[in-house]
Image (cartoon, rainbow, N blue to C red):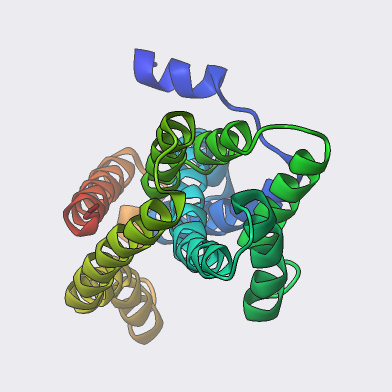
Length: 250
């Protein structure tokens, strides 16, 4: 067991809401056990793979939530800027932005939950700088983190908050535009990668159905297990390589 895998095991802290990830992982393991080994025992022996799979899925889920929050945060800050120009203080502008985001994204959206936390914090005399900094740390979104830092500096130095927020909206908007353009360019490649991931399983399944017994020599013997384990290793390497190639961050 490598040191990196030991570290994953030590940090393995599943939550109650993570059961869809485990169901997906178990389904993939069952697929591997059937296509590569024709054995339930193989699925049990491969079960440690659920740990790195869990962390990868959690990281991907966090990335999606962070990006979704970033898009919604841009609209929230735009609403704050508009409310400030209408004469609201910056704290009250966030309260008005909450009402706007409820209409735009719904009560259960990420930004509404975060703005609700901010409004409640303001009512409990927590400073807006601290609330925004907390949001930036929890979200992991660089736009939110940078906004919190710039806001804190502008607040302490007495800068033009209205102009600062308006400039921030522009910067976030440009960044999101670049991300969307990259997503469009990579969407076809992502689809191709997903197709290539499942092609080997379709080939094995098709040959197995049309020519029963054709692959029997590869199962339930040491040579066949070694060959199929090598095939599984090659597939996993190709999958990891394709994931790395299409994972582009702005």
